[in-house]
Image 1 (cartoon, one colour):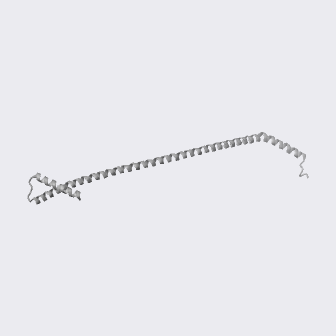
Image 2: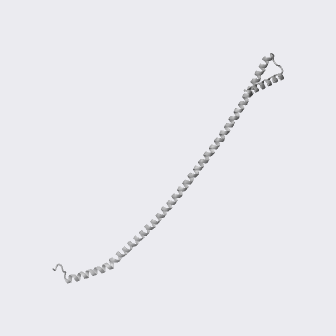
Image 3: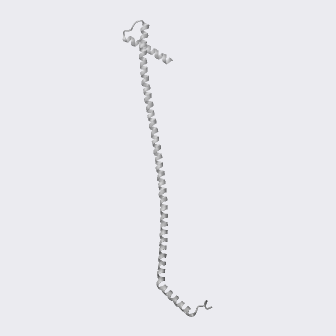
Length: 168
């Protein structure tokens, strides 16, 4: 049993050595260990505060980004709306201009047709007059030398032709 129970001398020296060890540890080891733990604790708290602050800033930046994105979308929609309206205005103006140009062209064509019609009628009158003179010469049997007689016969023949055309 001697192996299990230490002797009083051994126990005494173990207690003294343990006490000295505790005093030495308290004087030289506990202070630096506790100060290192406090430093570590304060640095962890600062890191947590910084992380929380960063999280708040990130949340704020996220909301700012969403607001900017929403504003950009609204501006894009407004620009697209304005562009569409400008396109419609330009198309409307182009249609109006084309219609006016078409009307002008139709008016010019009508005027040209009327001019050519008048020219053709005048030419036809001249031909009718010369034919009338020839017919009159053949009917009368001699050439009319007097201009007044020619004009009278021509006028009579033209009136006859007009009456025939009106009846037809």
